[in-house]
Length: 391
Image (cartoon, rainbow, N blue to C red; front, side):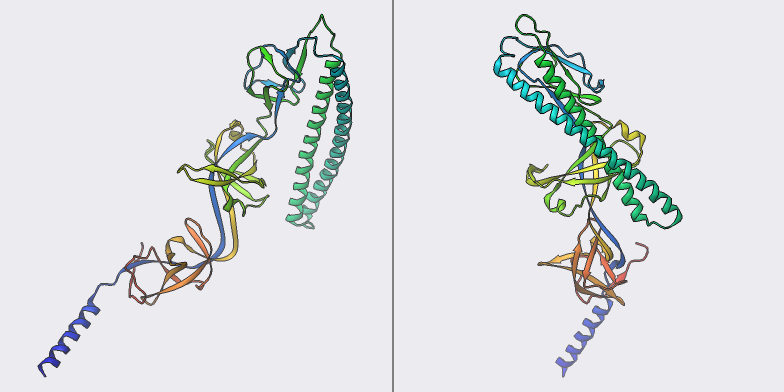
């Protein structure tokens, strides 16, 4: 009888202790529906889109260059002079080879001029289409998508014409070079040949500043247009596989106050093993972007400058979005604690896309569900909690 009474007293004390135990305080977040975009951010660099290396067409004696890095040059401007020992340059075999090169240069020039004419015709039609699309868009008979497509076609046509004109300039440069070699006098007089800039731009790099003997094919200097920049950023191959040409990225860390936009032009199809800062070998893929917008300060960015590039790699419409801090892993599954009337229950979820701040789930939760942020390790399924207010 005495033992039964003691057991009842102990049970009452345990019940009182349980009821009086403090409830853990937690912070809640609501599951919301929104467009979810996951980004990756990596260091990138700016570089001149089209760069040209001017090399010695034959072995000879290079005169000291009169240009420096950063100097502006015009198309066809003389940038170097090469004098050569006359005796071995125009023997029968060399002359035959040069005559064959002259014929090839003539054919290349004709092809380049034909391509330039085609590109001009395409640009003319694209300009007309764009003007018509803008008029119809003002009248409301053309959609925004159709107008953007017309603008994109005009941009591509302009770029194609620019490339065609550069190809023609290069072909003319090659023809002039070969003709100069063929017209040079034989032994006894070697006035030398002049090397010309194939395009207008600036000197980006000088390989051979001082005069001296150089071998055929030796790079002498490099020219390009620093106002026509592209951005390159190397991403992990697991991220690069989700990047699509045409998507817009955000560029920061270039020295200006405001970020600029850049459009992904291409994702290189080949990955390259590179060492990370931690000494781990990673497979990296170069992603090439074209800056967009008119920011006058960005014009001061030059070849090789560092930038921070933020590229979207996943986009989910009408996704269930929650803070990443509510997720925790047990085994191979992701879980959350769902709060309902002061009680939390552990629920499995299927993560559709994982981000550093927010993530999207594909199943396991309903819209508006209250989930525990940064759940403590001591929190258990079925525990009663107090909700932190204003945290």
